[in-house]
Length: 304
Image (cartoon, helix red, strand yellow):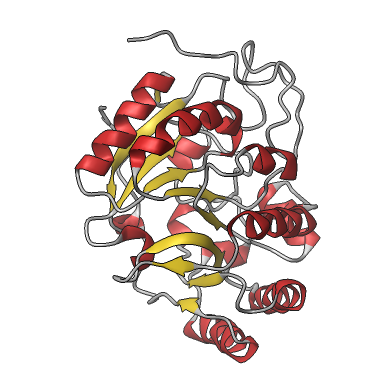
C-alpha cells in the first residue's frame, strides 16, 4: 500500500466550523478522527433519493468520524468511534472511485466527508477528468464556507442536511448551538457554486443542491420554522428538498430525552409535509416505513 498522505490536513485543524485547532497528525479532533483518511465502506448504495441512486445505486464512500456526532445518529458505529475504519491512501481512493463507476454507479457519493475535505480536494482534482459521473458531497450541513470554497469546481451535487432552526435543539442534540446560521451560510455557498438543479434525460441529478431535513419527534414546529426561513432566504425553487421521516429511536441512547425515545407520528410528519407543499418546495417525501436498521449499511468486516 502506498504511504498515506497526512500533510494535506492543516496542523491546526480548521476544516469545519468548530475550528478545534487540534493537530490531527498527533491526536483526533472533535470529529474523532486523525488526519489520515479512514474509510468504513465503499459500495453501491441504493437507498439515496432516486435521482442520486439511479438504476444501480450511488457509489458511496462512507468515511469514519463526524463533526456533529448527533445523539440520534443512525451511523453511530462509524460516526462516533465504535468502528475506526481502514486507512486509505489517495491512490486507493482514486482506485475505489473508478471501481464503483465501472460497477455502474451513477454518482460518487462522499458520505460525511467534512473533516477530510482538505485531503479529498487534491484527489478529486486529479480524478475528475477521468471520472465521468457526478461527485456528491453528502454532509451534515455544518460546513465552513472557506472549506467549501476550496472544493469549488470539484463537487457537482451538494447533499447537505439542514437539521434544526432552534439553537436549543441543535445545542442539545448536536453540541452546535450555532447550527442554523452556519448551515444557512454554507447552503448559500453551495448554491453559488452549483446553481439550480440540472437533470439528465433519464431523471438523474447532474448538478445542484438537495437539502435533506429529518423530522424529529416533538420538533415539528421547529421543522416548519426552518422551512419558512429557508424559503424566505433562498426561495423554494433554488434547491430540491428531501423531507425524511426515517427517524428511529433504536439509535438514540437511553439517556436521550423522551421525544427521541419514541417514533415520529404520522401527524407530525404530515404537518411538516403540508407546510413544505404550501411553501412551494419540490423534491422527495419519504414513507414512514423507511426507518430502522434495515436501511442502515452494515459497516462491519468491510473490505476494499
